[in-house]
Length: 290
Ligand SMILES: [Zn+2]
Image (cartoon, rainbow, N blue to C red; front, side, top):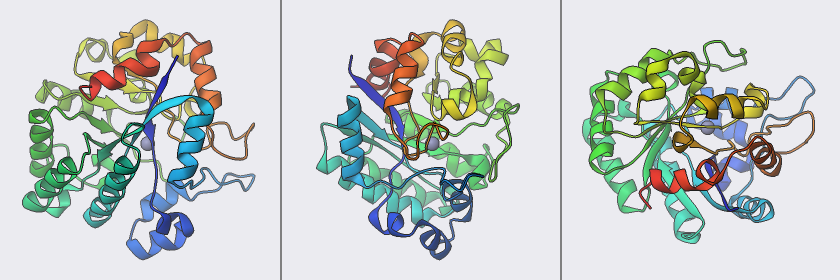
């Protein structure tokens, strides 16, 4: 059964060479706090593979295609820089990689929308992973709403970072009130939103979220957040057509087992829990209209 991993992060070589120095030089302190952190045992929370290493890992684990998600950067310039890098990745591996554009509405109306046009012209097919709460803008921010309107016109899905209000604390964690996502889904009924990290379990706690046909949920970072029984509990509550397999690679999802990030164990966990072709592959293609 082929797999599409809907939630992958990847960075340009100049960042990978020295992530801490890069973040300091580019004013991306929140990213640094989350992504260059070490666990109590001294192990880094993630690795920084290059494009070739990502492709090798996908080959090794039978991942047919991967969706590259941009980070929710604090600065518009970093968003544009990552979008250009993703355009190159997709050009290099058009049959294997799909990429979403990241944006910061703080750039203002014209710069933000022109960046969105440019990203689309370069082959990017969605928006995300954005986090209004972490990037420091409100969900009523006018430029953000223009982005959502244009994404809807272009049938681009929008991936949003979500934290579970009852989840464990960790350095750099930002609260993302679940009511905000419900409001966006209601106010933009034709926009397809993917709420990352099982949507912070929103649909298990709110019956209305289960009914909203424009809300999708990905499984990114699942083993760090929940026990494996989450797969069964979630798929029993939410139509499986709206659940997407995603890893959050190169985050190390099994720090007790592995020194480095890998995709294989999560794929095995998902299959063992009964995730079928819809969750593992088909829904991702439908979401990006392929
Ligand atoms: Zn992510």
